[in-house]
Length: 192
Image (cartoon, rainbow, N blue to C red; front, side, top):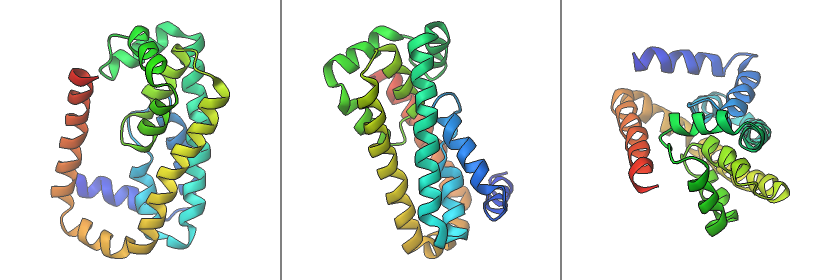
């Protein structure tokens, strides 16, 4: 199963539609979609390392624009925002995130935007908390850009060797990735 999905994504990575698909995934991941753009970025950079920073730019711009949609959902569509947060393991809703932003503010965006933490939770909760929009935008550009550009630079430099290792042990890495994702959601539910 993982080999077929991987082969499909890798095949898509070398098509003319890949940049547009990357933009769409990056945009919707920041507000509602559960799959991060890294799933597409990695094989795209590995397939075309000379375009690494173009792909990182696409991810950054689309992610920030999608983040604005997430912010708007939190700001103006509270019932929808609370439903999305509940679906991602945060039934506490607005009060929890208003507390996060009141206590940590900018650091919530800077730290969580760099990590595999679902960015949509940050964007929607920033809107729920009525966090300063200008600060939200510049910190999102900074943190998402850093994440995608560092990832692209590493893949551009070490991609072929990493891809050979990854393809050799695809099932192991896919299983570890799923365990990390599930573990992350469990940790968020009980530690967040």
